[in-house]
Image (tube, rainbow, N blue to C red; front, top):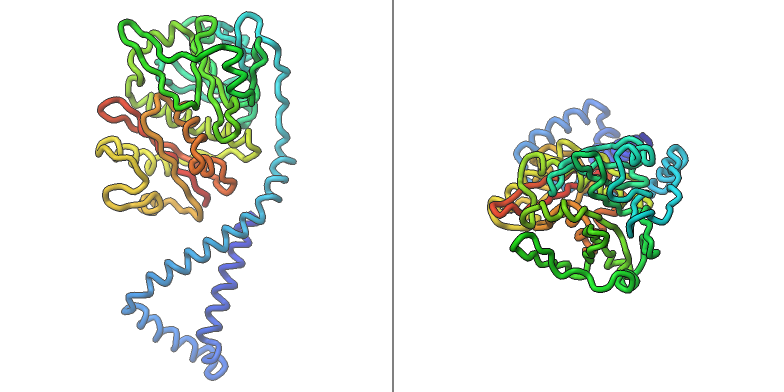
Length: 382
């Protein structure tokens, strides 16, 4: 509300200054009547002047820059107010796992859903993942964030977190080094065999996969922060073997699942870094989805489409108002988890994810003929 008032004041001041610059002398000579006559004459001239539209657009851009600077100055005060109004929930006291190598939020694979929700409360969202089961999301305004997957018996068969909820019988936890992880568990897997097919693991040093307790444990590393543990995914061995192929089976439900999962993962990592979570933008979903569809169908990958439109052009075309915006793209990752971890290890994409100014986010996903997902994230502030 304060920012809107400031913006209105600036607009009025700019209008008044511009008005007096052009019509001050006329007002002093001929009064209000003379000013009105001169304005009428100028309007007729404007209608035939090809430079008017471009000048107005340039003034608008300059104004957005000024407003952005003011918003930067106001962010510290707003953040302090938000923290005062919404105190952070307490982190759970983590215990060493009872029967497995790792636990998340004191939950291990095989834990009944009733115990999970006694520990973590009611879920916030349920969406389909690439294993054909749902990721069920738990958090308190993205604090203490984790996701659990359940089998038909309502027992945990998958876990994921990118927050400080990891406990291990070996002492590995969030921010442990990769060297210490490999000392604890040895060399990571190079491949996973499913039936007669051997799937190679190509991780570019951003994660390791281990077979522990008959579970496939993927430990993700933050390459931008001394290659330390930044997240963990634990998948039941049988569930992993049941998944045929590298990618999931494309469907509208999986597309929607990937979209909401990437949104939640982005908010969880923002909150871990002391930033406010973003609000889902349904209007921007169209913009993001259409770009992913365009890339998947026309076999290209980039921010500028074949028609020469930038992300900002596409947002303008969809009537999305913004003063600052950004776009992240990913392609070929098997899930939103791997897409998000890859984006966070790219300095430019990471900067967009962690930009304090952004308020809104939407995600659009599409699959190409080889079932590869294309991910588009549209960030902005109104």
